[in-house]
Amino acid sequence: MPAQRLDRQFERRLAGLVNSREHGVLAGGLKGIEREALRVTPAGRISQAPHPGALGSALTHPHITTDYSEALIELVTPPFAATWELQQYLCDIHQFVYRHLGDELLWVTSMPCVLGGDAEIPIAGFGSSNIGRMKHVYRVGLGLRYGRMMQAISGVHFNYSFPEKFWPVLQAVEEKRKGGQPFIDESYFALLRNYRRFGWLVLYLFGVSPALCRSFFAGREPPADLDPLGRGTLLGAHATSLRMSDLGYRNKSQAGVHVSVNSLQEYVRDLSRLISTPHPEYQALGVEVDGEWRQLNANVLQIENEYYSFIRPKRIVFSGERPTRALMRAGVQYVEMRSLDVGAFDPVGVNERKLYFLEAFAALCLLCVSPPLAAEESARYEDNHVQVASRGREPGLCLWAGQASRPLADWAVELLDQMEGICELLDSGDRARPYATALALQRAKLADPSQLPSARLLDELRRQGVSFFELALGMSRLHRDYFRDLYPPDLRRLGELQTEAEDSLVKQRDIEAADTLDFRAFVDRYLAGTLI
Image (cartoon, rainbow, N blue to C red):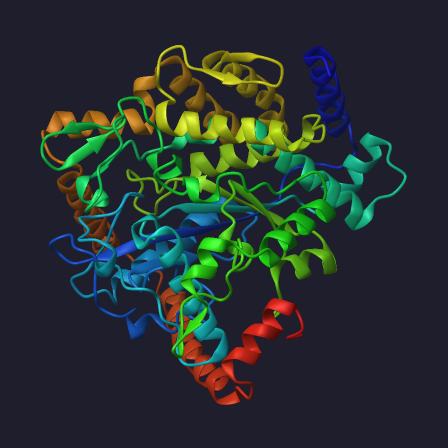
């Protein structure tokens, strides 16, 4: 489809929203953040201590849990309509966590601290219940399949849902006869396809992991395209996000794995096939060997979450419910953007300007025309993400754009130009114009790539004459001091978090006491989708 026609369709949709009678038609979308961070010792080594009991149960606490490692804490916000409220909650929960970390620090970068190999990365435990054991075994399987080093990388996920009032207006603009959840699902999957097309822009503008500690390659030869800086640092000269490159989450272990985002039905079909298809290498590992569980199954994916994608369609699940079953039951509720590095320069790992931009970018991806993607086409667009992650600041870099390649710089300017009208719509009635301001800051990065966070971090390394480890450790200490010195604290919020921590411990004990199935039967029923 010609680009000029695509632009006209986008402009028609945007004009329809602007001219609708619904005031603030895009305002009020719900936003949430999941922020991961390694707990490290004062000397900067990964913590070997268990998840602090004062933070509650990692299994049942709604806002403080762990990801892969026992030391990889994950802070999850509720959804908020106001960005400032989301940012304030993040600040409060960080302050609460630091009150219970003793002398430990939260590592401020996506790429990890000094590591002595897989054995130094403790796998998260979730208690003795069946669901707790299953979460642990799943992580054991990840470690065997991909190595624990990759699982020590941390990130930030941005969760977003459009306001309810938006959907009937968009339906009218689209002149669709049928609305409701099928229309919402169709629209969210259009967003997912365009995120595959355009999502590299997020890595370019916000990637902040161009360097890492050499210990990440303990016992292995580092890639030839990484340059040494001193004795302990490796960097990608033009990288934006090594976390999202081939040596991070986009590792070759899942090369060739394709999941369609052309529709909810195709998405569930492809994921279900991967979860039920045996994998010879994983079969060789064994599932339960001499009474020891090594993985949940020997299939291409143990469960849905093992498939790493830049963005996911999500629906809150019932206890024991599979994510794909939840999507088929009630449709898409929100999307989870997963390609954000931890903002090393931001105490809570993200900032309001970034959140404003991401909200507008989600609207861009939904409103732009979004034809179906063939598997080969989808793979080429996904490769753009990897190229930008590993060499996005390379002068003259070109990306595949459907029919031919085009300069990243030109494409990025075009996307930001299209976002201008969206930001005006989001800013309607707000004199501060936060969305337009956030967009202007990104334009400045395009005009001067030295302002990109990835360039700033490399500049700090060179300016201070320190290693990646020394820089990240120093910044981790600064962020700890920021939260410890923050005054006055929100005592009401801190009290709520304390109550949630105590309640979560009770909930874990209740779950453990209520188990009646043996573990194998529990796993079989979960994988078969018959627990609920």
